[in-house]
Image 1 (cartoon, rainbow, N blue to C red):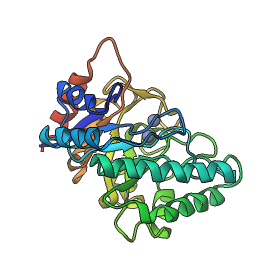
Image 2: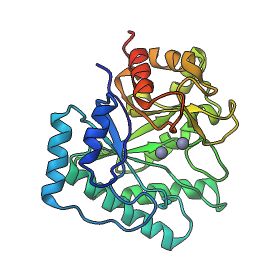
Image 3: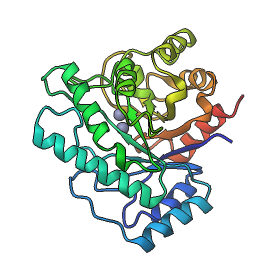
Amino acid sequence: MAKVGRHISAAGSISFSVERAMELGCNTMQVFVTNPRGWAVSAGEKAADSEFSDLAEQSGLVPMCAHMPYLPNLASPDPDIHRKSIASLKENLARCNDLGIRYLVTHLGSDKGAGHGLGIDRVIDALDRVAGDAADVIILLENQAGHRNSIGADLSDLETIYSRTRLAESGNLGFCLDTCHLFEAGYDIRKKDAIVKMFERVDLQKVHAFHVNDAKFGFGERHDRHDNIGMGSVGVGGFRTLLEYKDVNRKLLILETPECASVTWKDEISLIRSLAERN
Ligand SMILES: [Zn+2]
Ligand SMILES: [Zn+2]
């Protein structure tokens, strides 16, 4: 059975996310484990943490992903922001370990105009510094759509970072590919030959999860605007083609689509599940 889920709200208590995921037909999910719009991390409480991990395991939702909050910028040239970003990454790793969450997805951030190579060096430095904190968690570097100064729109950025950080040596590093970001950055996932070329640039074996999102903008336009499955520029046929390629359908497939009046999240999940389980 394919592992299909979506980003689920942890509002109220993280344990509530389990029931929300089950109602949508998920058998994996992604959550925020800290406030997504702030720097502060509140330490968990042992009983609540084990309640969540037990519930998630019993419900068949493991392995799961957490997503880093929005403010950290691992590529930042600003020493203060960089230091705070590393601290946030460490705290999120600790929360994932406490909650039994295997994967922590992070963006690579922006060099803010200081230079692409420098940005990559800053990300490597950040990952090296958390190598001792990862324990059972695998950090997944997420590709980007390609807005100005961002790191990770070109898939070779991911491989460069992987090859140069000691976090990879301990097996604590992998990739998460967002389909909307791929398409916007110029990887045409609707076409088999483009998919073959894409996986010459990035090693599919290092990819543990996909963010499965359609794209509101056109091919290569570099806008990070997710659309509902089949309603954007990728289309159902595009997802079918991608999910047929090698073992793409055996990775975690996590939707991050917007709320929409004409399609439910439950229907989107069952559509992706049916495409993933065709072969
Ligand atoms: Zn993301
Ligand atoms: Zn996005």
